[in-house]
Image 1 (cartoon, rainbow, N blue to C red):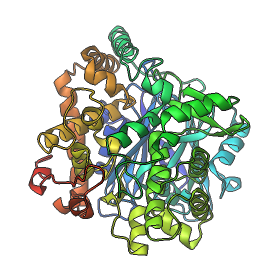
Image 2 (cartoon, rainbow, N blue to C red; image 1 turned 30 degrees about the vertical axis):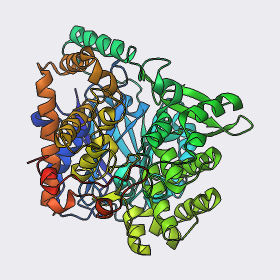
Image 3 (cartoon, one colour; image 1 turned 90 degrees about the vertical axis):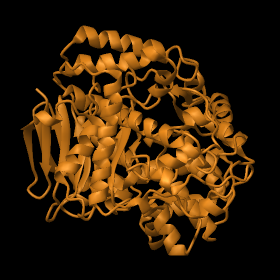
Length: 579
């Protein structure tokens, strides 16, 4: 029977609770946000004792459903000051799902001692002291814990940045081969975990009973429909765009569209795009051979396999994974066009435990201030080492782009609600701009991915420059994302779902098969909107107003080359997204 683990860090006590009826049909983001709404005072300090950190696998996570190995992490964000959910694809999610652990709630703070490690098994959870892990980078933590607990466990940890309680610290999960490389990166949730004195979680799936399923036949019917859709769509199928080139294929696409933020969001195209794009990345991996690999899965059951392993020139492994957002943030945004420099920066972010998007944008803002020259990879690498060491400069950068901008008096700071913008220029893609402005999460591409329609033509093609219809587009995509995040599916299944109706039928049937519900397609959209309204309500109670649903002022008066667009969606239209 499903259960909730409550971890009291003040008492070093772990208890099991029955799942309340109101949470029965919730999972992933829907559950983390509801628990945060129910249990966290909106006015509390994010790094104080009254905040709570919630881990929740999706509803179908742990089953055989394709690309469903996602876990959500929720809390009040120390970066935005509002509610936050970040998620990752990892075997840990599937282990918790099979253990029938609906959620782990970490609360309070230890009075002394630590750091602590939470061990989770089929028999429950226990806290043990983990002094030997203090200050260790994520790969060292994984190595030590796999040696101690065996190779079949799952590991969650924070790096030094989380222990320093830096607000761009993420939470690291292992990938399919045990690397410390999969992140719930956004919003500073690693700092919340650090503030709880919790360095790591070890999940042992031995004797896991498996996910409870009410209608196995219906589940399998839906599972097959979704898998067929994923194996048919040109973006998600084996040998398709994502499997062949990875997400980094978007570098050249966005640069050609004039929507690739370059040199701290001062231009929309990058002269060095081809040097760091997915095609060159794939060719480099193939040429170097050795440990390198394209078409790599973040966890078991991934049908898309958009990850990769990037090798050194001698074929030895350098880093996994070179994703679009990371390559852009530490590459084009800083005018760095050297894949090896970018790979090293991603490796350092993984090791120190920071969000690559926030790190890259913070470094770009620092470059704008003259702290380091644009285009200088060696200088950017040195800045990330400052973060890892926790020096005064490192602590400025480690608290994100907005903090860095205030520290150095920079006006062009691309953030909303205190969170750095990802790799899609909102002056060019107005739908993404609406999402950045109005999402409860702050600037977040995964909150409502209108790039599908505005650039890729998936789910219909719309003019990215046009203001018309973008409020409805953003709202619908935000609601769709919220329900996908709640049920445990990877966001990339949406490509197939938007174009192939049977794919959405498959998702709906798989969910109904697990829960024993009769959700309709219309119900899924309503489910997503309910989550968004819960999150918006928390933010309002935390002090957010309409003024927080706006993009930075400079985007309204600085035309972006090469198309010389500004963000011109009226404030009155932004206020209509949620009414």
